[in-house]
Length: 337
Image (cartoon, rainbow, N blue to C red; front, side, top):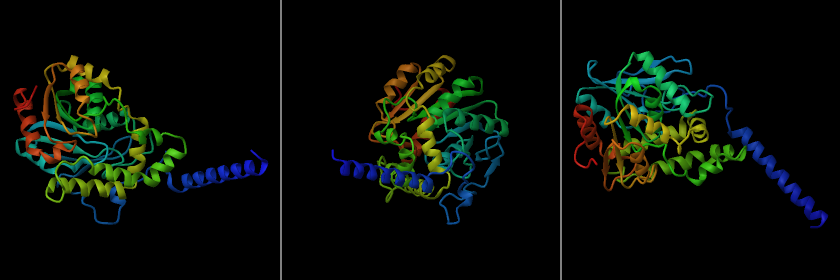
């Protein structure tokens, strides 16, 4: 290559590098420091702080956590651990029906979601488990049942493996933690400098699109899904700490190698675990259920044909019936295997 072309190529590369660095400076927040929550957003949100009247905060060492307690105070205790995007009130019909069945339900926002703090620290499984453990200490719960959905399923596995004495029965709904591989984009966003720039410039639109891709029932005709889409879309677009929390979770959370934790739960909670999974799930693929059942031979397994990842939103009463039967007498209904 002649000298002029070499100099031109070097100049183009330098300009591109400068552009990426400038974009990084403009769009990527610091890994440290508080970024705020929905209370800092001026526009009207589909998730009001008082979504339920029992709205409360726990001031924890890692940042405040927003939570709700639903149902009778003397009801059987159930903790719900939500997924990576949508905050606590993601499935209102599901939670309200559990409360109507007499359960005392704890619903909370992960860090970087809803009205909880957005601390500047790696969002690994350790952070999520610590937040939950400290919240439970604050509300005074020492023994309870726990339901983990999607990312929350993996958090639940890590929590129950670490604190088995606190947990009675465990329900996993399409749990992460046993995925064979992550989407290609998750590899791209790990590239130093370029990855964070890409994520913080295009991430909101990509996540918003992905969050709608696995709905089986159209939001236009299904109010529970309409609520889920409105809530997800608002959080993704406007929450000041969401993108950093999501990106940090992709970087630091182990989505693929949690077998040892599920296997440990099988030892401590034999015949006390259940899983619910839609056969059309493409977010946490249904095929991963084979690996879960291998790790947990005594698992009560419930599959639902023709439903995807949003099974709790699309079939809340089905999920409540299954969970109620399991928590009441240890048996699932209908399609349990």
